[in-house]
Structure formats: structure tokens, C-alpha cells
Image (cartoon, rainbow, N blue to C red):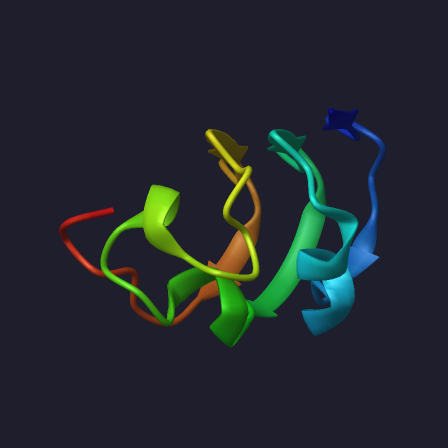
Length: 73
């Protein structure tokens, strides 16, 4: 679990975030920009992704992220 909510982090989410093997990741209420890393959105089913196989909860709300998220996520 990694809870980094409300820390005023600025910048993009690094693609290496998937190497952390987390079950929960909360990056909400920051000032993150850019698109969501391909490792997170490359599959239509979050629980089925090989690099993020343990992730069951992801909160990226209240940031300035751009790009598309598959509707099945």
C-alpha cells in the first residue's frame, strides 16, 4: 500500500510505478499532470495486468491528468 494523497506533488506519474507491486496506490489530491502511464491503461481489466497484477485499488482523482481510460476500468 502506498498512500500519497494530498501532498501537492507536481509532475507526471513515472512509468516505473508498476515495478512497485502494490495492492493499493493512492495519488489523489495532488497536482499530477500528463497521461496515465501505459502500464496502467494498456489492458482493459486492472486486475488482469501482468505488471500490476496485485493492484486492487487505484485512486488518481483530483489531479490534472489527461488521456483516455478504457471504459471497462
